[in-house]
Image 1 (spheres, helix red, strand yellow):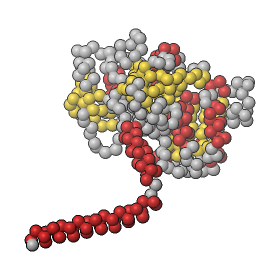
Image 2 (spheres, rainbow, N blue to C red):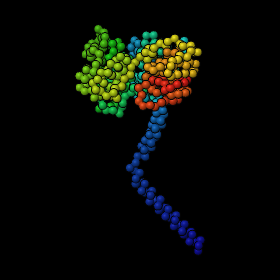
Image 3 (cartoon, rainbow, N blue to C red):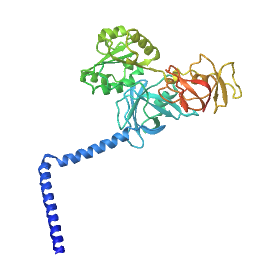
Image 4 (spheres, rainbow, N blue to C red):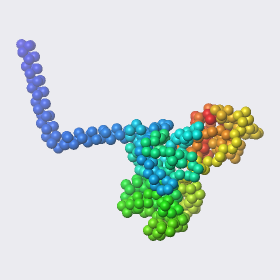
Length: 408
């Protein structure tokens, strides 16, 4: 009897399970027609792929990465654009429009790698970076790039960097002003602003004449296609063949007075890039008109040509001393010198005593000059507060806080 009861109980449980299965199966069958299973699967695969690409492209690399020149395009007599693709074929990280990359160049006759920073001159891409280089008279790096680097040449490239970049989340009117080769970061910014149809954009470009006006047709096409973008061109020394009203809008240098007439208001974000004299003058004028400092970004061009020549080195055994002065030791160079009140930066101190330190931007943006701190600490020029940085520093902006030992 017990056996019969057990069998009947198990049979009943099996029937209940079967009924439950059939009930829930019918419920799901009623729901499934509302779901495109094939499309949902495709969407899941696409999302997964996009997530993987995002993860790959969101992480920059440390040091230099090997690239190859995929194209070399002549923009004008002294300006060339290089298309750079990663040798390993992996996706490139996104960058902020306006940022730059550093090239590490092996130039014959130079013992050290020559480092130069160049603005990225196109919008973010996972496949290719573009840099546009003007050949500077007697410029070591630019001459090497123009004359010796061609399609297929490998180049060492550091990851994008720099604090001069577009605020893509802002909806305030945008005013970009460039002089000469200072146009390059704005080529990247303008490409991105095409995706902001509600944001008013004014780009003022000053150049000598039409022969030096790069990307002229491309810029005009942007203005014709995107109603929010207005481009104003100034030729400071137009050729006879340059036609006023067609090729350019005027010959007077841009001033804040002319900007006020143009905008009607200075309630905008301003980005300036060109010679140090141009950016400094416009920055002062904008501040005098009441434009907040955080609404003005500027970047001066000059690179290595603005770096003063190093004075004659002080012999390694020499210790330059003075009462009440801070002692700075450059360990690799076997030199100990003294910091005096009134000095600007550790980089200038090093250069004045023949201590070699790589430098490019001299403003703390590129990171090329970073060196290790072996003892002591530094503060940064124009910084607020009493914080003291240890471990490493950017000597182009740093000043010692007490005695200091550097790995240089």
